[in-house]
Amino acid sequence: AIKCGLKGETPKVHGLLFAPSAFSTWSLEKGMLRIHIEKKEKAQLWPALVKSADKDKLDPQSAFNIASAHEAGQGLFQAQDLEKALEFYKISAEAKFYPALIRLAFIYSPEHKPPFPVEHNEELS
Image (cartoon, rainbow, N blue to C red; front, side, top):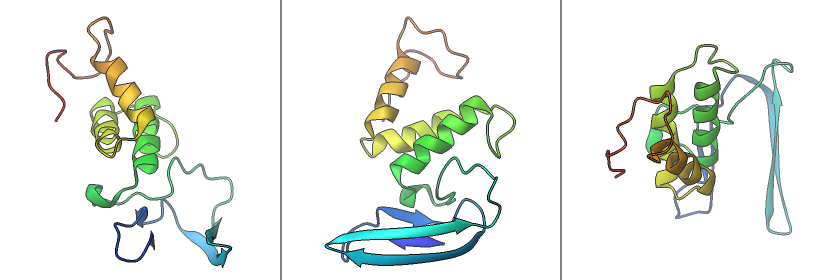
C-alpha cells in the first residue's frame, strides 16, 4: 500500500499498489518528495499506481488511467468494460482532473454516439 501527502491534508496518493513491488525507497530533497517503486514483474503494464477499492481515496490521475484502461480493454482489464470506465472517469472528474472533464464532456455531448451506457440528458453530479 502507499499513502503520501502533506500532514493534515487529504493524501494525494492513497491505496493498494496496482501490483506487487519488489522494493521501494523515498527521499526528501529541497522540499520535493521522490518515491521509487520497483515492480516485481518488470514487463507488467500498470495503468495506474494504485487500485484502491476505496474510490474516495483514489487519486484522480490513477482513476483516469484505470478508466482509460477499462475503455480500451488494456493491461489487466483485457475485456472492455464501459460502465467501469464511466465510473472511474466520473471519480477523476469530481476531483476536477481536466482530462477526465474533457473526456466526459465528449462522452455526454449530444453529437457523440458513444458505445457508453449513458443517456445524453443525464446530469452529472
